[in-house]
Length: 164
Image (cartoon, rainbow, N blue to C red; front, side, top):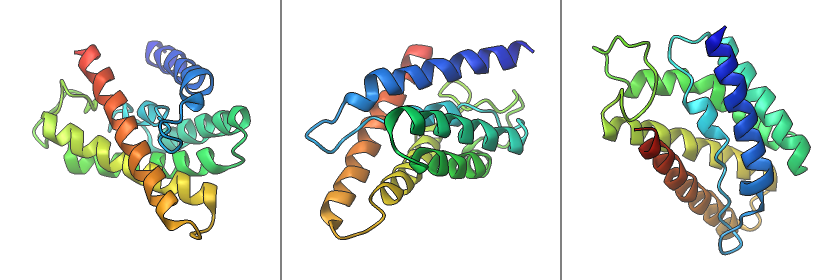
C-alpha cells in the first residue's frame, strides 16, 4: 500500500510539472522536455506488466487532456510501458537482487544511461511521429526528436544525481 501511495504522489507531481512547467518550454522552438516519461522508467522490473502499461496509459491520457495533444502522449507512453520491462531486462545487471529498481544507485551508470536514453529516444520518436503524422518536414521532425531527447535526458540525469 505504501508503494502505491508513493507512486500516486509521484504520478501527480510529474503530471503537474509537465503540464504547468515543462510543456511551456520550447528551447530554440524545437526542444521540449518530456520529463513525464521518467515516471515509467522508474517502475521496477518485478512490477506487473499490466500495471506498467496502465500507468503509462493513464499518465499519457491526462497529459493529452491538459496539453491538447489528442492521443499522442497516451499512445507513446503506453508503448513505452509495454517495452520498459524488456529494456530494463537488457540493461539491468543479472546478478542484482534488490527488486530491480532502475536508478543510478542500483545499476552501473553506463547501463542506466543506455537504458534511459534508449527508452526516451523511442518515446520521442513515437511522440513526434504521432504528433506530426506526416514526414513532409523531415528536418524539423528529426530536429524535434533529437533535441527533445537530449533535453529530457539532461533533466533525467540531473534528477538521478539529486536522488543520490
